[in-house]
Amino acid sequence: HIVYNNQAKIDMLGVDAKTLAEYEAVSAPVAEQMAVGAIANSDAQISVAVTGYAGEYGDESRGIDGGTVFIGSAFLQENQEAPAVYEVTEHHFNKDRTECRRQVLEAAMDVLERQIESLVTRPKIYVNGQTDLAQSFADDDIKYGISVGRRQPIHVAHIDCIREMVAEGLH
Image 1 (cartoon, rainbow, N blue to C red):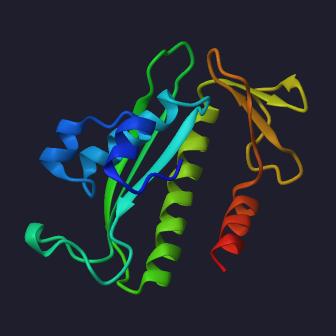
Image 2: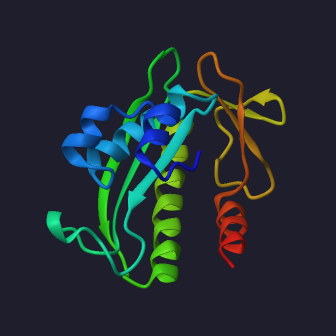
């Protein structure tokens, strides 16, 4: 989901209007609720949510500089009905909008990579349709599916390929 305005955050991701009123959109509590809501309102098993000021201007009234970004992430564990928060972090990136977007992408991909690696030890791993817990996640030649609870398996290409595809989209 891409949700720029607060009403979309409420409608599409289930962010609490009280949280938005108290902390405003660019905040750790909103990033957390966005990440949890992305899973709760989709078939996703993991999520990364970003809220921030990509550029030189921030919110002077709150003392938040341009380039300030909060990244929240969540996941759905096996046999769990509600998503759990993986982490929420605050970053202070370059105030150049293009460079800030690149840095946000890199940080979000790092979170996604850590999240996937942490999930590999929890659920069953399916490699080419076969369960094999001993298979290394780092094998470059195989695409993996991670089956978590009642959800369908997700297919995860090697992280470097994902990074490359997303980076191409920024140009």
